[in-house]
Length: 154
Image (cartoon, rainbow, N blue to C red; front, top):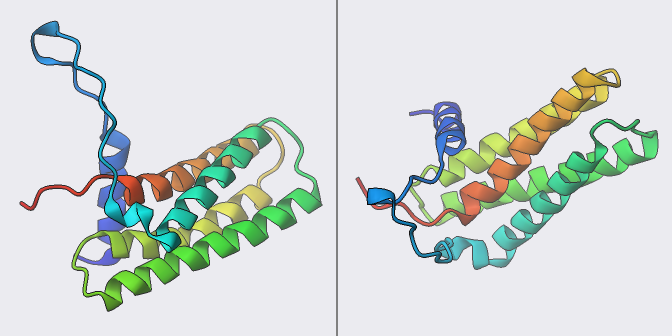
């Protein structure tokens, strides 16, 4: 399967994730979800914190005019995050990791500048907010693919 197909499939999978009700209508005990051990490594922890911060900024920009300085700063931060994602892709490839994460990180690194360009090209209003929403989804996915607990082998 190509990296692009893996990225597309994983985005659909992440979007469909939800909590299932406990059997018999019982309330399940609240437990902290297991996090990937990868998320504790400095590079990947940096990606997560940057993507979370950018997602908060993107959410706050909806419905507001975007000054050129804000867009310029956002472009710098998105460019840095995309470079970090690509570095994560390369690191996982060097380790011989055969999982989907390396392909997903590459796809995110390639998509981040495209989503930001869509924000920059969109006129104010609903179209700009839709482009910001799309960028926010990608930033959220960037966090979730790194922090997701490892899935059992199939």
